[in-house]
Length: 406
Image: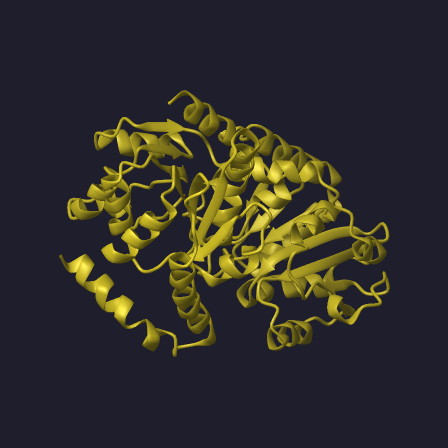
């Protein structure tokens, strides 16, 4: 089979892949270390549930379900990642009892993972389809679920030439999908083991409201000014928002949390800004500056709680829209770029009235300044964002109800 041949060749070529960049080296070394860790760990004395998340975002989708399961059952949680960004940021998470990089999708690797873990249940999150893992899971008759899954008509499963990939789906015990479109696409292909659960990310962000979101350095910086938070920005995003930042009204301040915090990226951003700017890493943060650049990770979800308006990055270029739900839960107008076709939550929030899509620097400045001046419009969009989140929570309960009754 071509797929298996390619997977085997790629697995053998990992040492070469690791020489491509530091990112790839981290990933390859992580796979090798994970294989050894799997081989040398005894899992036999506990009941294990295994979650696989491609990266950070998918893990965040898994968190509400992991919490609910741990509250109900005496189990251990194993979590695998594909991406170094997910693994490195969450490898010490309190909910994870065993963490590893998922080895390449060969039959032997799949046997290793399943034979060692012997999981009682398996959950793959959103967009993860690994043929040999699915096959071995199915051969071992382990209950296997896709959680917060989302399907589109242009996915290969629904094409005439996608028969091989469609066969993977027959290995899934039950699909918990985000929306009616996904359910209908699966049902059209004969799948009846489908429930519309919604997206567990809504449960995840909704919990943020009950947490302590205070950040002293943000309060020192804002000092009663109208606050615009620009989250997870890339260079493409920054080029669009810079003119508005440089020309914004006096009683407005900006907090930028870039996606990449490498010194050269921060220096390039700072050079474009013509108004007084402070860096989080330099300390002594106060209200004398108009812009604060948070060149550190782990603060953004709390920073959004201080925003009057938010811009979410990733949708101007091709990097992919970042999490619009994190600011939406706090109730505010949200702006983002046009490349959101793979992110139904953006369209849905726009239709609710909480989000505006912008295409150019001039358009961003026009819409931002309108929101700064028009408190009625700002309040309308804020209320829409809050309502949008409140109508979407409950996916975790749907999954848990199913698991308890089946």
